[in-house]
Image 1: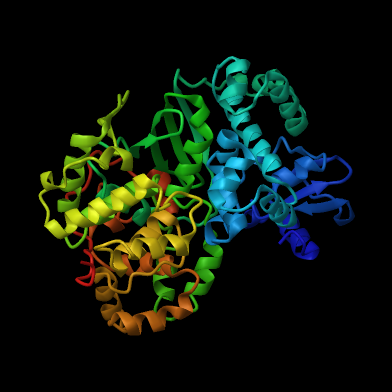
Image 2: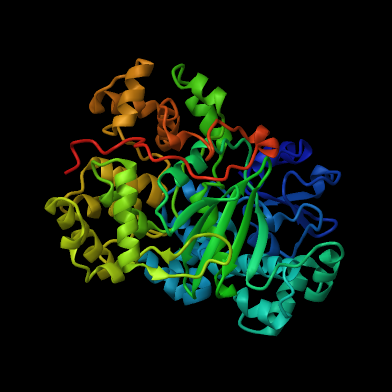
Length: 521
């Protein structure tokens, strides 16, 4: 969008927050760059220029605005809507791959040469992988500087900088303040985070209807790994350098996020995975506009605009859970997963709630005895095939995976039918166009709305919902009466009512929201 000068100028003059993260406004006279919704008086059009990324603006010598903090804008929805090389690279950079493994490691994950990746990122984003990772490190550093009392030397290495000097230079270049000055600006009146914890706000594009988002996560929560506690969805995280626990709760203009990390170097990855899990970089305006064009879906969208797709923090974990849940109720699926966690999960210490374990890794499950699981032999075979493929590296379900290749490899495994493959594509891979025409909940909803009820006919009808069929599925599921559609504690809650909503104290009872089609064997 940044190449459409007139459209960008209109967005800046109207302070349209819908475009935050889509492009960045650089002011030639002040050498400052902003998000489109910056509250300051917009500059003259002739003094504006536009960049597709914060990294490109920084690379061109512009500093981040201290009012609108453009480095903290929601991410561009393009990287979660697309499956091409640039989108996959951006998802991996957000997950910290460049910081951990450098550009060669990024190239190896994507299966392309480093030169090809550099060329494509420069063409679309105006910055290469190193500049994009540098911009991300600067944002992480600012969070740690402003919200903790960590010594600056620890902040530097936790944010991913290789040296104190590089850290100091980058912070000055990006924010026009030294690290010490940045901390002093916010020190007065703001309590610092307790040791090992961090509280921050995760922005999103409005509107956001949190009912199905948090309802789904909590209704399907694995005991010991996930819980609803004191008004927040909490879960354990397996991270590159250690472990973590996150608590997430919805507010009208942000998601409150509280993190407990054993290693601060994992902060970038933890935030990225939380945003991905809650689908916070989605573009609800585009989704609402297309789905509202269907007269059947239009009333559902108008009633609850901004439904997100509940996704996951760990792709391999969800694939295992999807197999455990084939053709059984949600309650039974949670029971199986809980047993697996108690037997093979890694214990964690929860300083606040009742979380006890990390979900077992594929490597940890590769040697387990499937006969210990109380399930049919066919499903044990399916689980063993999945775990072995993941542990051997033959199947990639992480953030930078190729969606169609992952689908093909899943479908080649024994016991993986269309329902399981598309469920994983929707929630683990993040494909916004994943569709479940064989899901019983979808079929019941279609029948009640007067839509075609057979999978083939419904698929043909749903072609007009592309590329947002995963979001259409959320609206279809929402016509049912089951816990995945409501905030924990009962009742439907819109984003405008969040501020005055009572805090629920207990998770909902277990009822099966939907089960796999009989075609998945």
